[in-house]
Image 1 (tube, rainbow, N blue to C red):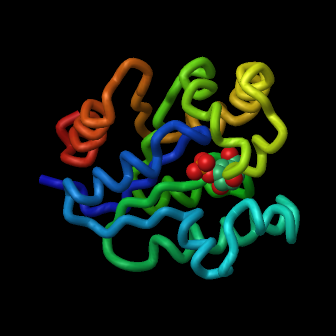
Image 2 (image 1 turned 180 degrees about the vertical axis):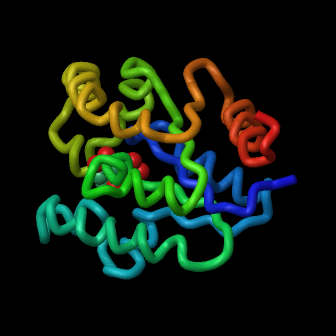
Length: 176
Ligand code: S3P
């Protein structure tokens, strides 16, 4: 029996939230909401353009609003931006509104996955492959306490997307 709650996927940039969210949406036949994509459509600008135009603080306000609006309808799968859990009381809000799953990847794996993301992710602008591991480790040490407030943690290192999907499905099905 599938849980009827919303499902929030959280985790660092590059942890697979959008990929797994989309797969989970298909597998559970629930609508998929990607918060960054929702903001981009509403604002008519990419996240990078928004950061450049309004700065991070105002982006966090938009993200907060998008989060609160995302969960108004029937049960859906929601993937959040990597910073969303770490601002305001967003983590508490998500936990009240649904199931929270932290897709936990190691700094090493994240550095590999994010090596070509400097142009699409504003926080990685100007960071070369040699800066990434240290930057990610330092960001993770600040952010992980927020991520670890999630109800469930799924470690992704060494797993295929299908294996991660299956773990999420097990959680949503209440078998784990
Ligand atoms: C951010 C992560 C991005 C996006 C923005 C800020 C962050 O989303 O929301 O660039 O603070 O970690 P992804 O986690 O989908 O890359």
